[in-house]
Amino acid sequence: MIQLFHVYKSYDGKNVVLKDVNMIIDKGEFVFLTGASGAGKSTLLKLLFLEEMPTKGQILIKNKNISRLKHNSIPYLRRNIGVVFQDFKLINSKTVFENIAIALEILNLPKKIIKTRVNSMLKAVSLEHRKDYFPLNLSGGEQQRVAIARALINSPAILLADEPTGNLDPVITLEIMTLFEKANNNGTTVIIATHDDSMIKKYKKRVLNIKDGRLI
Amino acid sequence: MNLFLMFIIAASLIILNLFLLISYNLNIFLENHSSRDMIIYLEVLAESKDIKTYQDKVKKLLPDIQTIKYVTNKEALKSFKKELGKNGDLLEGLDANILPSYFKVRFSKRLKLSKTLVKSITDLFFVDSLSYGKKTYNKIKKIRDVSTSLSYYILIFIIIITIFTIYTTIKLTIYSRKEEIETLELVGATQEFIIFPFYIEGVLQGIISSSLALFILYIIYSFSLSNIAELLPIGISGFQFLPISYIFINLFVTSFLGLLSSHISVVKFLKI
Ligand SMILES: Nc1ncnc2c1ncn2[C@@H]1O[C@H](COP(=O)(O)OP(=O)(O)OP(=O)(O)O)[C@@H](O)[C@H]1O
Ligand SMILES: [Mg+2]
Image (cartoon, rainbow over all chains, first blue to last red; front, side, top):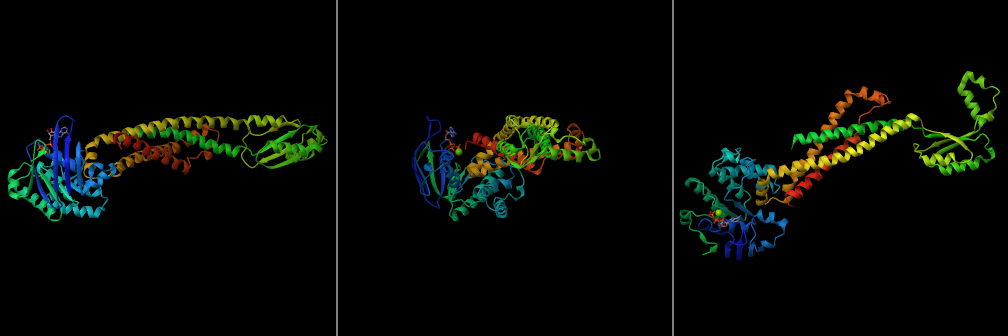
């Protein structure tokens, strides 16, 4: 599903953030990506959905070399990848409902279908009562759940979650992790970046550890 | 959307359409009043046996002739008498030879004579003079021409102003939605999906501005109908509002300008 060969990434040409990263993640895997703050977890995820381009090396997704992707096919790759951004990236001028719906609107789905799917997703992340709120009127944990709902709503082939439970209390964390496992059981390949060791211990999944930009 | 900038576009459109309104009405007037007839008076001494040759020469010079009729001085006298009615006796004993014979020419189209053409006709050796049009006709034509060329200048001004204002508005919208656009891109929205609303906004601004302008112009028109009509020598009944085709052209041109300017803005600021 995801293959990286000798991937290097430097933002400024001087400091190399990722060094010779090689990895293979199969379809349907559930992987934790860990490492200290600044180790390069977010950077690695960003390379996968082309927010950033690798400085060197090859990245294959579904056996396609994504660095050779034409500019106008990038959106179609991204539709297969649900992303929970570390900074959420919610649209502040849109309500919770609209923020989640956007992931379906870009697929030009009919309004009716969008409505039912968003409503059931709102239920899954326990945010029905916040439906018409704007992101800035939500708590950090609520915002995070909106971001999670948006990433999961079109049942993507790959889910990339960057610290998705950072702001959540244990109860909600459990709920969200159950959601991720459910998606995983339905065939979604899941990669979660986290430095929450207790979570890694609890779920007993494959762990990729980054240290100073290298996988160890 | 910026209401203030839309008012600026609307205001300049009102001025443009005011001039178009004037030109349009004067045009109607000119069309109704310009004669499609011309009378070419022949020299009194012109030989009647050469009429055929004269007629051919006139035909060769003038385009779009529908009919050309030769009227002898005797017939001219007769109709002159008829016109005078019971005072026709006054002409009793008058020699027909003091009146010129003439060609009565009717054109298939409205008459548009250039100075050179008029000169080349009067230069024909048998032609004495010719009569066509009238002084007021020329005067109104002049007003019409001034008004028309003014509207061209205003049009250029409007094109610039509209493009600039809509371009600026879209630019501001793009800046204010920078984060939103970035997010849309990251969750997989296509360029078209992202751009589309900006085009809609540009077109809407154009349409709203011109609708506003036409609406205000119509109010001005209905309230000052009598004053304007008095100013122009064409009478109230002759003073009409812009026809539906002008209105559609207005809407079409402004929405096109809206589209164009949002396109410029999108290309420049969304880096497409
Ligand atoms: N846009 C950028 N421009 C320049 N340097 C960057 C940029 N983004 C990240 N970096 C640098 O790359 C390194 C790795 O950052 P990254 O965000 O990938 O770390 P991380 O493992 O996700 O950390 P955290 O756990 O705190 O989120 C850091 O040293 C950071 O300063
Ligand atoms: Mg990070």
